[in-house]
Length: 178
Image (cartoon, rainbow, N blue to C red):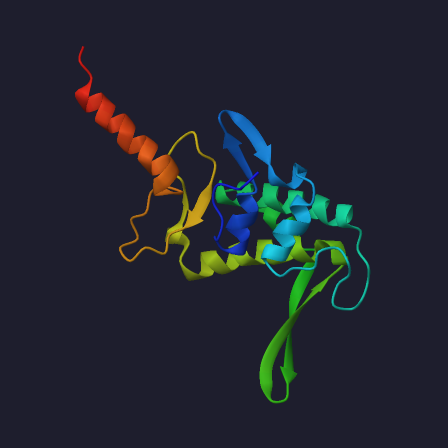
C-alpha cells in the first residue's frame, strides 16, 4: 500500500508510517519489506549490516523503529520523556577529518541507529523552526508535516486529500437546503 504522505523530514516521515485509511489503522511496517523500503528511502542501514560490518537482523530494526515512532508521536503531543529514552541509545561524536569538522553517530546497538537518527532529526527540527512542525488540520487525520510554504500557513497534510475534503465539506454546508 502506498503511504499517503512522503517526502517529509526523517522524523515526521517515520511518524507518518502509521495512518488511518477509511477508519482503519494502517502500519506501513506490517507490509512485507515495509521496514526495509522505509530504510532504503532514507539511505539508512537496511539490516544487512552497519558501517562497521556488524550484521543486524531486519526484525531487530523494526522494534526500535516502532518505539521511536511512538516516542516521536508522544513528543509531538508534549511528552518528551519517551523521546529522551530513544536518544539515550546513542550520541553524535564530533571529529576532525583532514582539517574539516565532521561527526559520527555512535549507538549502543546497531539496530537502534535508524531510530536514533529519526529522534535526533525531530530535535533538529525543533531547533530550527518548531512553529513549522504541524499536525494536519483534519481532526480525523493523524499525519504530520513540516511546513516549508513561503508564508508558513499550510494546514493540510495534502491539498489532494484532506484539503479537498475540507473544501468540499464547506461547499456542501454553504449549499445545503434545509
